[in-house]
Length: 233
Ligand SMILES: C[S@@+](CC[C@H](N)C(=O)[O-])C[C@H]1O[C@@H](n2cnc3c(N)ncnc32)[C@H](O)[C@@H]1O
Image (cartoon, rainbow, N blue to C red; front, side, top):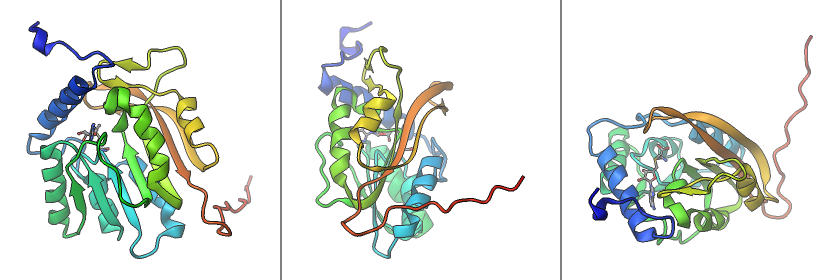
C-alpha cells in the first residue's frame, strides 16, 4: 500500500476527516439516493414525539443530513429546517430534493467540527452521522445538549459498542449505551435502544445505540404524560 493511502490513526483527526469526506463524497456522487428519498424511522419517530409542541415556525436541525431525505420531510411538515452536511455532493442533492418537493430549507455545507448553530433548535436529528467524526465525535455529542432548545426533542443514533470493546476503529467512533445515556441524564427519555440495523455500506448488520429525548421544558411547562391504557383480555 502506498504510505499516503494508509488508514488514519485515531489521533490523526485531519486525515480521518479526509477519509470520511472522500468516502461520503464518492457514495453520493451517483444519480440515485443512497438511503432512498423517503424519511427514515428515526426522523419519523422523533417528529411524532415532538408533535405535541409543534408550532408554526418551529425549527429543526438535521446534522449530517446526507442527501436530505429527512430534511425534506421536516420541511414538508412545516418546520423551518436546516441541514448540515460536509460533502458538496450530499449538500447539492439535499438542495435538489427540497426544490423537487417544492419546500424551503437551508443546507449548510460545513464540517460539524467547526460549525456551531447561532441559536438552539426545537427538534434536532443526528442520525447515523456523528460516529464518523472519529476522535472528535464525543465532544460533538456533548455539544448537542446545547443545540436543543428547552422543551425541544433530540433524535440521535450512533454506532454502538459493548463495554470493553475498542472505542475507535480507523475514523469511526463507537459508543456504549451508557456513554450516550449519561450525557442526557436529566432529559425526559422517550425512547432508548441498543439495536441492530442493516448497514447498507458493508451489507451487514450493525449495532446502534439510539436515543430520543426531550430537554427539560421552560419552568411550568408539562412533560409528556402517557395516558394509561385499558388492557383488554
Ligand atoms: C451514514 S450517513 C447518514 C446520512 C443521513 N443522516 C441519513 O440518515 O441518511 C453519514 C452522514 O454524515 C456526514 N458527515 C460525516 N462526517 C461529517 C462531518 N464531520 N461534518 C458534516 N457531515 C458529516 C456524511 O457526509 C454523511 O452524509
